[in-house]
Image: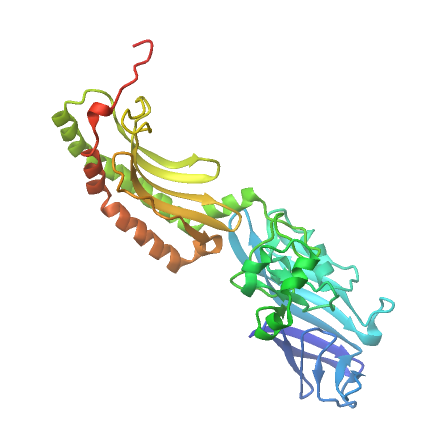
Length: 403
């Protein structure tokens, strides 16, 4: 439960209070009466006409009306340049009932104010929807700064049948696999079932709320809302490269692969001497080697660039150990293994799909780095074992014309 400081004002006076939010509903106490609701114009509680004005319903219940409220909401943002998430205070001024100035509306957002270390931003135009207010705020922010809340998340949608001023985004993170196939309103309504709502697979959230499963929208995501601030592929790559995982992995591999090369060399030279092999066949290291587009690799390998393909297998010669990952917009595809064309039993590893958000988790990164360390620990011995399986008589060295 999160707590937001608020100032409430009506014709009977002004007082400060605290609004509690679980992400779907808000709770507050005013003049000894408890209220709750998902929207500022739908705060329901005990009816006491001596203390408040109410918009009454046929069943005798009433919603607070004819008031102004100023609420300060700690709000999450993301810096794509530094790959850092940070919180800033967003102050929102709202009017409900007869205090309104937008003709025909029961409520309005009067203004938003965001004060940050990189500037102050204001939206002073009167708006009907929190969605429009936050989009107007986002449009003022620096290009690398993203609002990181339920409104900007790929798992959030409004209902095609309409919504209120606040708190009517619906979260689909519990059925994200089905959401991938949604391309229009018809697809959305096909998965937006009564059963999904009753089971809690789909539930309402507030535009300013956030959770650990938040994913910024890309241009490939279809959503039913007006949000258009998309994260680009280049920004995702930058996010990965600046992550805790990438930095730890890069440091480890740059250090250990160089040591392994030195460790293997002496044994390797002994094998070459025993086989009376006279041509160049060096062991090389490659660090952060960008191959196949966005695929990053760190490799320890025998260099067969100047050799013909095998006469026996009609395939290229190769012996390499590598750690690699391919970057997509939501995941990296991670893999590490020893590969050899001289050993048919050496089977390839399965690629592991890792959510990009996990790359900043200290616990996850620690466990994954330990896995790689174990792989590296056994690598020198395995590498030499594979070298001994090479049929050096099958290696045909290609001399340059000048030679």
